[in-house]
Length: 113
Image (cartoon, rainbow, N blue to C red; front, side, top):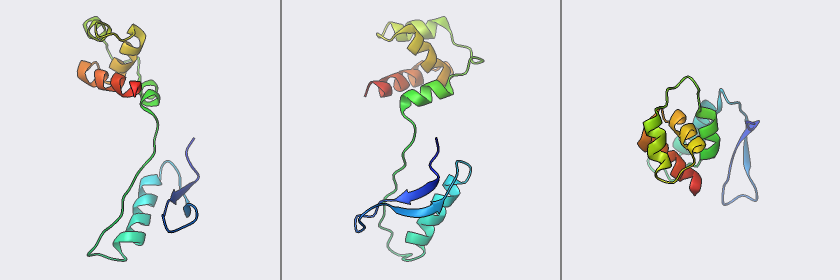
């Protein structure tokens, strides 16, 4: 579920600051506009701000990116299983990583944290 509005946290305010409606299609443009108008346009010589985005977990990405039309080799599955991972999770990670064992390993390790 995508949030209906973009918000920011400002340490000088009591709560979140709402910057108006947004959608999955316009989110990046909306946030870029807020950053520009709130920080860049006000002081072009000193830019002191941080940006943090929240998104789906690595597990969600593994499930979302799994596509059955990508070919996964048994050798790749065996390599990950030999490292102690379950065959089903290994296959899911390999699907998400286009059968790249190193990338699949990174995904699997990220889900352990």
